[in-house]
Image 1 (cartoon, rainbow, N blue to C red):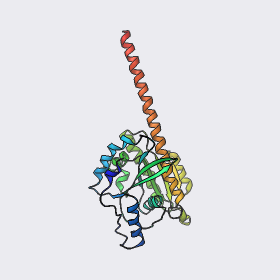
Image 2 (cartoon, rainbow, N blue to C red):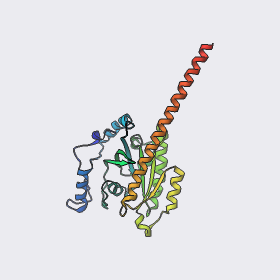
Image 3 (cartoon, rainbow, N blue to C red):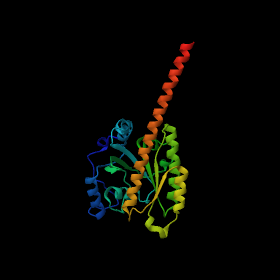
Image 4 (spheres, helix red, strand yellow):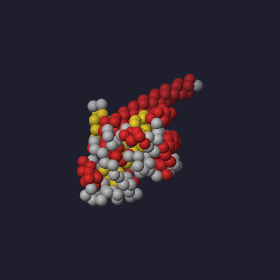
Amino acid sequence: MGAEQLRTAETCRRSRNSPAGTPASRERARLSSAFPSTLLTAADTHQISRSIFLKDMTRLNGQKMDANIVVLGTDNVGKSALIVRFLTRRFIGEYGDIESLYTHNVVVDGREQTLNIWDAPYSQQDLCSESLMCEKRVQWADGFVLVYSICDRASFNTVSRLIQTIKSTKDFLGFEKMPIVIVGNKRDLHHRRAVLSEEGRLLALSADCQFYEVSAAENYHSVLMVFHGLVDRIRESRVSVKKLAGIKGIVKSMSAVFARRRTDSL
């Protein structure tokens, strides 16, 4: 993806709920200077549409890989905290209703990766496979991180519906695979648990997804595993799609040869 195309002059991440000068607001300013980000508005979303058509041009060249990741979940599940924990190793508990796109370079299994992470606010339209925003996200994304809180049964049910919506949209658009990781957050609040770990594992098994239960507040390494695990799935998906395309090309070539032979024999 052309990450430079998605950057705007505004890189300061602001929140209506955090007054200037608070520790949270100062940390966001530091985060913005360290990790290029874009605050997405209705006027900016056309740039994502442009990037959809550019991302397949270079992502398989050489050892460097770009990956577009969408992080979704209902309010108060900690998805923004999860992203910031991954980017900075730090935990921030205060967030407003902000939609942001981050660019982050990492090394996974000895390979340099550029991750473009879309922190997407939740809306009811996310459950409609026919919505334009849902189609844009699936077109743009190489993988999804779907987050729920283990203390919130409704957020878990929403993740289940999001999986179905993403898969339906993927099939409608004719995509082969869409790697998805399910994350049960707030593991540290086990005394308020409303969703069992086994339920998360069963959902992931039935949907052919990866599953992690983490605490963004307490454990950086488990959060790191979430994103590294998704990167691995994205790489595997691309390899399998490339192999499938190669097989289809061979079959097409052989069919053409046999067709010519039948024509010559007549």
